[in-house]
Image 1 (cartoon, each protein chain N blue to C red):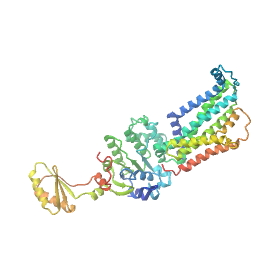
Image 2 (image 1 turned 60 degrees about the vertical axis):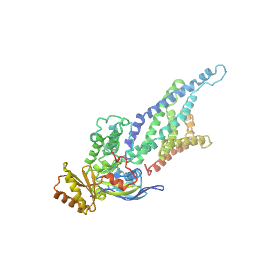
Image 3 (image 1 turned 120 degrees about the vertical axis):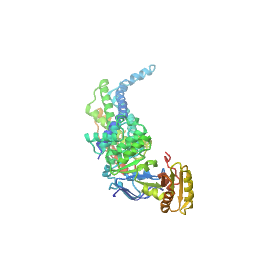
Image 4 (image 1 turned 90 degrees about the vertical axis):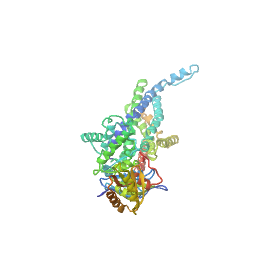
Length: 318
Length: 252
């Protein structure tokens, strides 16, 4: 699949500080890319370079087929940016702000009105459209910021913490909206809320101290960081069967240890690919009723903490 | 210049809706009304205040009304110009709205041009309101001034104000916060004040233009003013061109 965003050795220095260190990245067209990292890791710097608000010290990027460092207006016609830090114009009304943005993108007359109606509907702001932005709550402002970013039907959408100020229902709506964009728009989303990224993103990049430490699909990351541990949960009412099972499993050369977590047995093995079928065979021959059997996969939070060990991600426990 | 018209419309609407334009217009209106009134009644006020002392105060003339107007405008006008210009670019960079606009398909030149045009429209509207009020009250209390001469005087005053605004605007482009931008405008004001008192070069400053404005309003012969006007207008253009050269490759 063709890449919507490509970075080749992108470096950004501020004096002696290297904010971004030889970033190599490819984001496939139409994918939802989650960009994670602790505070000051280089996420915002990357977005600023990719949107043409700042220029790299060295290296090159291509976004939607164009180099952002050239300041080409055609690029800004193809992309959109929602920045959590932007205050927006508080004196404007919600609809007015979207009309202003639409005019900047060349919408006029009925096209402008219908597009504004459409994004207001999508972001759930129809009722608030006539109110001044200064009176919006943090969540409504975030929705409006997302709405303005959708106005031009961008090819590439850069989002900085798109759901951080929203209540659970609002977050759910926004994540659904982003999921609906899959295949139509390439979304580059930086977030501290790992749960959100895990929920909607196809691919994840993790950056730490300006360096990309991971770039893979969620499945690849989980496979790479998976511990060789299986979880077995038997149907209730088989206390002796569980005790017998533990004894049998313990005798297997593939099993390194067994722990209990309530009704769940956690079986640590030394070779997951051979141990899986072996455990299944034991379960079948013992004739026990199994409620759950799975290889334990790490969450994105587990992966993040393994890759960025000194940092605790904000919202990781939300 | 892509996006200029949309951005200019936004600038003027913003000036109005945030109350900046109405407040400036009211202040200038008060000074427009007050200048001829103050010139007319100052002798009476002085006599009333010092009734026990025999003071001879010359009868006020139309010249005093014009002098009072120019003095007031050169004081309040320049402060207003600095206040309006100081946050025009720096404020948007500080709040993040500059980034919000500049990732849209607008040129940085259009962004700056719309900002300064909006500022110029506000200053022109304020000078217009002030000029109209001063013209009517001068007519009422003294004698009518010639329309053409007075309009020319107002334009010369506006040029001086735009010069201070342009230097503050350059400051606002250079820095990321309004306060240092205002500082740059105030330094320019002080320098202009000092240079205006120097012989031969004083006419080339915004304050030096006040004498020309007075001559034009009173229909007195004004000669040798072409170069000072060109130089002062040139300062505005140089400040704006420098702003653009800085801003076109500035990281937001």
